[in-house]
Image (cartoon, rainbow, N blue to C red):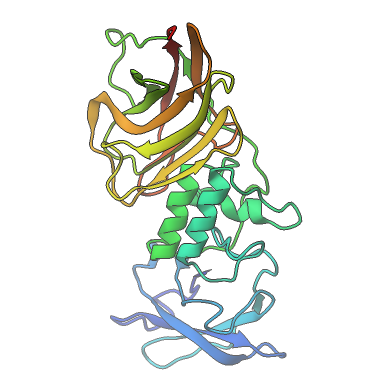
Length: 338
């Protein structure tokens, strides 16, 4: 939650510890009845003659017995013992919930737990779709935090959700776009990379395939800056040529990565990789993951493998949940006659 104290240091005794702001669940007449917690508002918070807005976390709302629809009030007491009256009661938003609070479905439970991240991964990878009768889509789309989402559900939202669960960021009431409104634009299809003309930039690309009898292993490679902790995308392939994809992490995936895949639809693979650790910087493409297909077409044939948003939206994220500009390079796999 956020608050500010409007009383200037010239009018109240801030002292060295600041003004104590106490928060209560309000009763029917708007007075405090159930103590929820407190915070201190210092002269640093009241900066340059202007009261600044301060954001705090009083703890788990459900554990405090404070649920959507309840009302909150507060008092302010300076170091000389002068106290304000109760503030006008503010009603907690009903039915909106919190950013990234998505488990259990469909309304969450006011708790930020590992189950929320598991469910976030399922949404991002396309294994589950938001319930249109609720604001699930709004709660899933939680990155960037400053705007309560951007209309794109991808790896950045999982990273921001992890930050809420770990306590790195204060949980925030749901806001921002109510539905998906966009996608990551840049996806380039090229048969070969012309390394001579490109400056070092972040990109995902199709590597050199390896053939083993009736299977082909296609590496997905990344040229990284060293601040990437999560990435998401859809791989599309020709299901008349390739079948039964098996996906494994490559040796340059971030340490401790969780891999989530969606292979429910032939011809498309939704992929999400997220970690608390960043990739190692590399000016050369390194194997992020491997996709092994069964080759089911006889004769010489060329199959395209491309990056799209059709199941899982493209996205690369840093540890703060910020989207990182990434180029996506599709490619070809050429099968020869047996």
